[in-house]
Image (tube, rainbow, N blue to C red; front, side, top):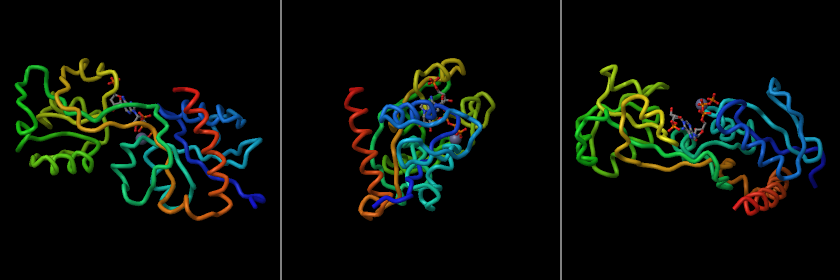
Length: 219
Ligand code: PRT
Ligand code: ZN
């Protein structure tokens, strides 16, 4: 039985994932307050507790058991701890791609052109894995943000960053040449949580039934 147990869900406090994450939960008929200053809050009519945190920290919170589940971009998951977590649902929103872009006038002749070049990115692990799979050896330069300015600043020859509309690349004089990886928001648990048959896992099953209806209704 559930008793007083609550399922702990980590969601992004502010950013591209926040609104739609909460929209899905609200679409499940779950009600909660809307005080954005709170870091922790529980739902009024469902055994669910929210932890509002930075998206970068969500994989580690779930891995370490601070939260049972989290909503995060697949890109964060694959960059940070691909083997510790399990995707329980693809939520479909926050679609984007990780692409290589080069200065607008640079000749680009396919992935091999990148051999020996410097590529700036905030996703060194994903990029490193993909380049290795494709047999390209490049120098990956890690930047935590503002990756688009790297070529103009002389730090890199190309960049590899998330793209959705493409406007940011255009505005920075860059051209998207190689989409490497696609991402959407996913709900994750730690490995094995779904087969534990614990009270909180039972709550997750109930939540997922509702989430599936919300996703079906949207498609
Ligand atoms: O503060 P916190 O750490 O929580 O948030 P954050 O600033 O790190 O993340 P946030 O809110 O920007 O993004 C959260 C997640 O949204 C990402 O991990 C992706 O899964 C997803 N997402 C979807 C995107 C984009 N689209 C996106 N376009 N994340 C970032 N971008 C950036 C991109 O890095 C580039 O700077 O938007 C710019 C490009 O956008 P376009 O539309 O000009 O192509
Ligand atoms: Zn972040």
